[in-house]
Image 1 (cartoon, rainbow, N blue to C red):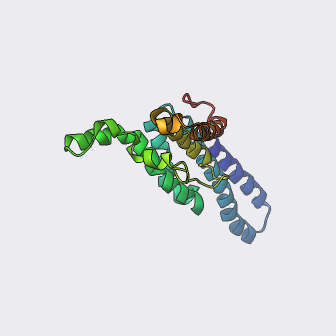
Image 2 (cartoon, helix red, strand yellow):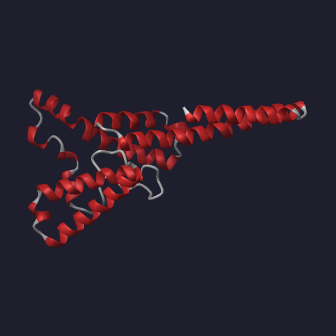
Image 3 (tube, one colour):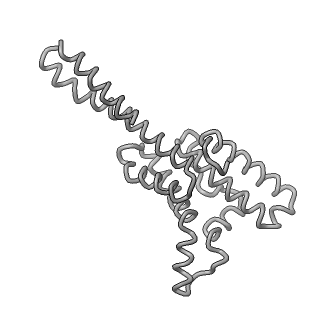
Length: 195
């Protein structure tokens, strides 16, 4: 809503400033000012959607916000961020929809009920490096969301695998990186109940 108000304030300000200008300047200036106001609005929408995703109380909400961002990505995101979202979205989908996918697979006699959630990240996370999911740029607006999932996967691996928890060097590495990732996510998403 703030975005819409800011847009109209900018538009009214532009119109007021252009009233005194010659007609040619008025016609040439309005599209530029509208575009600037719209780009400010887009930045707010990007930040709002990412914050809503990061602070969501349910995985389905988080996924819905990120799908909305992906659908509007051509307008809201630069090319590197669109690429990062395209890499992160399947991870979020697998986490949020893992159980439903497993039920459908088991119903078709194709799946295992005990591996439904971690089957997509377990092997990649156990390797520890390169990081899974793929690391976005540190300055990316998606970096805190990436950190949230990276921390979860590392914590899961620590709890589930004695090859991590019983080996002091691996345990220390997993716990330190999970803690760092959770700190990044917590700072960005203070209303996230899981953090």
